[in-house]
Image (tube, rainbow, N blue to C red):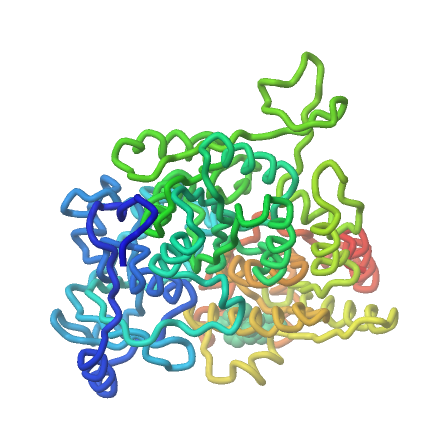
Length: 572
Ligand code: PPS
């Protein structure tokens, strides 16, 4: 098949297709029956799809250690090819122990379907702090990419080449799901010779349409909303709603000039490095132009309220590689709304004393959650209607209240009291996931090791997210002693409703004095090992929605204070 679109692949070579055909496919399926298997995580599913369909050309599998090190150090593979992002298969220590070079393993999806076979080249334990610094420029857990790396990715990486067996199966929006080959074919069918890609994980509004129409005219090119639908930033609007919004916004472009295509990208939110990586991927898809935006692929603000990356850093980095890229980089202007003139302009074009209005994605979600009107200058009415439908005000959404604190701090009492108050008010379905009760019903086989505690919290988070997603109220009351586990739960819940973390900050002397179960005494006597606060750490929450020390109040008063805080947040 010849490409009408002139862009070659990013490395100037052939677009890879790692799927086996004919006899090779039969052999791969046969081999899979006896191979050691690894079940791919959600992010690994995103990566493998783009490896197998050539979107990550020239990679022919998960990176080996030499490529990984070169990418961290120089944003190039070991052979010098430009590639800024590590694409690694992370596994558990127990799985890694079973591997040896040359062995073939089978990679399956969550339901056990064989996706690919992989010939192992090497297996190593990465220095994750080094990777976090190199890729994200940060080791902060509040950066979603760092959190994923440190708290969710396995301890070992396995490199090796892939033979694809089954493409990941989708039931949603199949007409928009393109491989690099199928999108290039569509470009040919549409008669396009130039195509601009817009990377986005948010709905599009008036400024986006003005900006993209301007770039289309300046470059005499057509346009695709090439939206990331794999893993985006935790808390983002789901892709179902976004696709409905994109379908509507496309009607604002001259007919046939703009299209929609879904990219199953596992975003890292790595800012500049990610922008460069995304440009290479778009070149592999056959795009001739790629828009790099303001704070492109940035994760927003850190826990001190500062941006992780300079707003222009992505544009500067990608532009600096323009000579090596076959795709033309278009730096998107950051448009502000000049209210007096009722038009959008760049910051530098504002008149003296004129204020430029702007609403970020996070601010828009906040407006919707408060149930406030979305300004007409900002968004099209048909998009607002869609967003309001998907994201009703907080008081109508599900939410999770997550009490965390030492044993004896008063978590269970507060949680029970809150449950009763909410039931008295009526109108909400409330589920209590108390630490002890969960341990009996969900986690009876788990110990109090760090690994098992995190697993226990993950299970609570999963159940709470399902309850929240379906409009209910989940009240959780485990010790949850580690920051990383609590962050994972927050990430899970914030995509489907509101997460309220309450640190029950009763001093340990008071908790120990209460010692209702006699466990502190046993821990002091060495009869219970790894007891939180005695010989196992409790990492205090850094930015909880609320802190309360139950030794300062009568219990009924403490419950009143919690209820008042929920009212203030707007969930009740
Ligand atoms: S965790 O860390 O979140 O998984 O703990 P959790 O599931 O909430 O269980 C805490 C209750 O288990 C009892 N218990 C211990 N707690 C802490 N450390 C050790 N080693 C331990 N062994 C048993 C204890 O009674 C906790 O109950 P609460 O209600 O918090 O007092």
